Image (tube, rainbow, N blue to C red):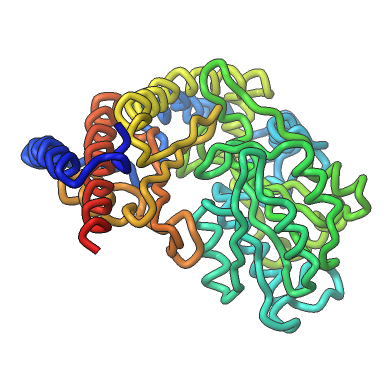
Length: 427
């Protein structure tokens, strides 16, 4: 029976049962973390052979005869460009290979647009007025953090099953002070949605300011679950076709392919944006870590090597997603107090609990030893207007830990919902 259909007495009796189960969990003294989408140690060890590909015996000269321990080749090894071209399915000449953090690249790029302009001779965003960014929600907290740090206003747009609500995006983008949109287009953080062809095409051709930029954070481009995958078309090609060739920049990395703290980050752009950014990097650094680029190229070799490795990671990660989703379906589906996503890939499950209870669920879990992502993190300024969304990160804990954490989360979701219904009955 749904909680909304229960009488006050039925809710009170159910509360005692749920509270008893909660106290048993609390007495166990758990200490589990589901707060961030971190790879597990097993995932990291699956790629540990990368470290063996470069040493004093293997040599540090690339196939293209580049000394990877010396200066030069600002935009990356040709072999590494080719590897990421295959991963992202874009031409190699559009790939710029940098350090280990795509977030770093995004921050630097948005800061450059804000302080100096988005193109040669373009007026800096900060000089045009109170500029704004479109933020599909629920979304990625670190994107929102960039905009908040720079004082860029954020306008939320709801995510649908195929991507952001494009009617609303198109309406907002007509404002010349709206300068961009954050997108995680494949296995989106946290909903797991992959943008449909129609969404990508509409983003490319919609009316917007000339210096409007799509921050295309393709972090999960090859991160499918076992036996599943989604198809994403090329935003750069669609922008070119639509007559807006400089509108989008793709950002990505191997952080969740190889090592989260020692991967390789890239951006992909049309020629104008590429040269504009390269001109800045020449002033900013003498070069990035080509030795790490070489390690990755030697280990993965090409897209076939990457795909084989991602199949291994899918074998590790998929059972964890299945534990969470199967328990949700078993314990919550009939109660009418929650809904959740069942993605084909990525790193997250998006859970919506009864509106007005997410913070309470978070508190209950924390008190009993399970740390979740901060409530509100999936919305700008940390403010979830409905107080309902919780981002679940299943990858880091073990299967056993995940089963425990999910069990506590379910109990906390039930308890918070019962409290809310009883509170309404008292009003």
